[in-house]
Length: 98
Image (cartoon, rainbow, N blue to C red; front, top):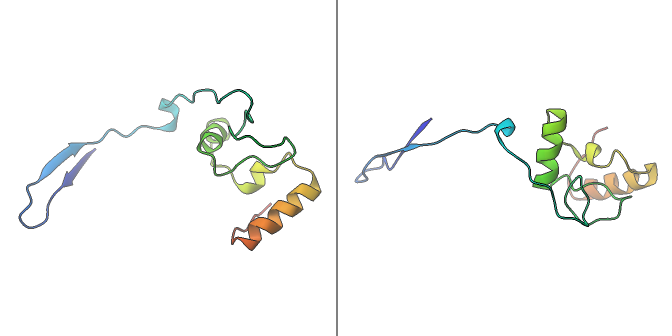
């Protein structure tokens, strides 16, 4: 793909070659030992995975062919933990759908 930059008045035009890569072309390196092996964050096992973690997003997408939701991140949690996180996320403007 080509991108043209500097097309404003008095600016020279530059054409940049941009290589697009797909997720399938990427290699996800293992996360550090001692952290959650699903999201690469140090959290107790009963807590949700960090849905905002780039590692979690990329790993989940490779495994499921879609991006993770907060519901996915807390699927392994107890009902009480899910209710707590859903409420706390709601207070911050994040709606979690089942």
